[in-house]
Amino acid sequence: MGANLVLQRRLAQLGFTQEELADRLNAALQEITGRPGEISSRTVRNLLNGSSRRPIGRTCAALERVFGCPVADLGFSAPSSMQHPPEGPVRRRDFIVSTTGTAAAAVPVVKQRRSVGMADVARASASMNQLVEADDRQGGHVSLATAALEARAKVLELQQRNASERVRRALYALAAEFTTIAAWSCIDLRDLDTAQTYLHESSTFAGLSQDPPTGMRMWVNMAMLAYQRKNWPEQLAAAQAANASPAARRDPFFGSMGRVRLALAHSSLGDLRAARRALGTAQETFRKAAEDERPRWTAFYGPAELNHLAAIILNRNGEPAEAEAMAHRALAKIPAEFQRNRALATCQLALAQLRQGEPEQATATAATVFTIMEGAPLPGRMRTLIGDFHRDLFRLAPSTTYARDWADRMRDEWSRT
Image 1 (spheres, rainbow, N blue to C red):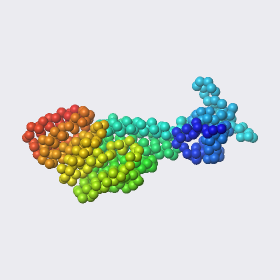
Image 2 (cartoon, one colour; image 1 turned 90 degrees about the vertical axis):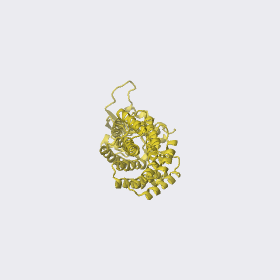
Image 3 (cartoon, helix red, strand yellow; image 1 turned 180 degrees about the horizontal axis):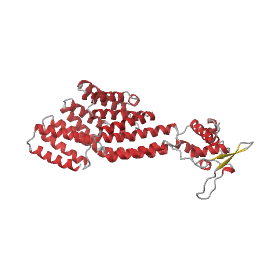
Image 4 (cartoon, rainbow, N blue to C red; image 1 turned 60 degrees about the vertical axis):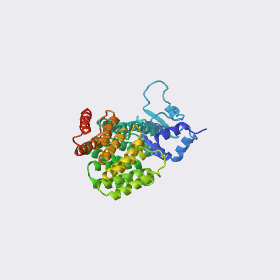
């Protein structure tokens, strides 16, 4: 008799190992009979390889409890006492008779909520990817944060069901990701206190998930929040934590991400040499990264984003000519769907041109930010950059026609968004 492919498929969907399934079956027997079960890994192997196609009654009861379906749906032949009526929706029997060989015992069946498996994780991940794509286009906004928190609530509800350790960790990783999306939206909206609360919650879920990329993302966002708060020591500490994280140590891709956060933190503290050194290391490390499969949220980080971040660092370091070159490189490669990042890189280009004494060209560049965003509300971080440009422009060329035209355009766009 061949292997029980139905049971093997269901086991894979739940993410159980053979040992975990044995533990779950024994726990189910404890609940049903009040006595510890004695199902071993060997018993599970026999169920999977087809050696046992007609398990005894109490094993069938445990299988139904764990998988939430009749044993016939798991590829087994049920004892006659456990045959479920073939008719439509009728109530299941209240008791299953289990024969031990010497006596019959009545075994109550308690209706259980369906177990959670990797298929549920995949569905939740798909909804997360949709939120990440919305963030790529428009940046953070209130409806995005709300949707992320609603999705998190659904994931945490799944945690209350029967699941393997692998599935539980994956669900905690998703809870961390959804919470981070909400936090990121608040950072974009400049609602920094709420962002801080969400990031603290995200750090708890990330720790429970034991997932290195999830932990990495949390530290990166901590560093960005500290920058928005102008808390430079905390920005450096979070960047150092990201750089020392397991993900950064194992994968040059994340190592580069951690190093560039260090560069940004050093530039905030005015340590230009350390910023330059960390930036160079980030660029060198990225070249060593393999084209591996990584979480969807990492799609933003590549040569284009690295050049964009380099432009930020060089602008802060007082090197506008090099910052302009990096911004041009970034804009040449940032994918069209990353509207928010294209607009942010354009802000850096405009600032670099303005600081080189080219206010008219810089104004024309800055005006394209509104075109790139296509009427979408400007995230709070982008408004801050536009505000910085506006102040610097009117300090350099307050009475020019292009400055007045810019002020009119900015006023119209501000009132619209």
